[in-house]
Image 1: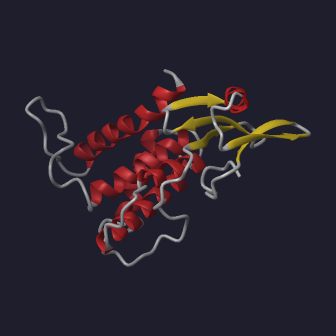
Image 2 (image 1 turned 90 degrees about the vertical axis):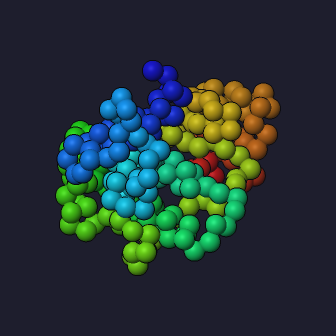
Amino acid sequence: MSSLTKIFSLKAEAKRELYELFDKEVRPLTKKPDGTIDTTALGLVDNDVDALRHAYVAGVYTMEYNAQTSDLLGRLNELTDFDYGIQACHADNMDLWNNAIGRKIAKKSKSRRELFDSLLIEMKNGGLILDPRDERKYRGEKAIKRRPKSFVIKIQENSTGANIEFLDLKRRIVLTKDEFIQAIRKGKYPGYAVKKHSNGEFPYSTRDKFSFNNLG
């Protein structure tokens, strides 16, 4: 599976796994005539299954990539150009809180099964937010409310922490560091430039002011 296919298919894969596990071990979910989970049915938002879904997907991204990439993808998922009011803010808070729990638990999990089991315990102990009206507030980086000019984010780094793989969300392509640098030099990414360091060359953003993309 290519890097691009993986990053966009991973969310759907993780959601499907979560629904199946929830249906077997928490409570039955609505099924389609063929017996599969009906993901369009009522009762899948602002509740326990919603909370576990966010935490599990964030955890899977953490295990496959890293916590920072999982955080960025989770916050980009909440990106909107509009203000939907207080209820939406509360729902965002619930989602971001549960995403953070998923990332934290994933760091200690050796498998997706262990991730789910640990999240289930966390939920039963009151660690997840199951209702947008919950008064607990997420204190980390918030959802991205204003659309950034550029859509390139780092999705992978090497053992020394250097960025080595990038996702162009607008063009839906994955670039290695060398591919991204070559594309910048060819003028395909006018908002980016290349910095030289003692240990090599690295791409960085020259025009946006968003810290979330880890490109300066």
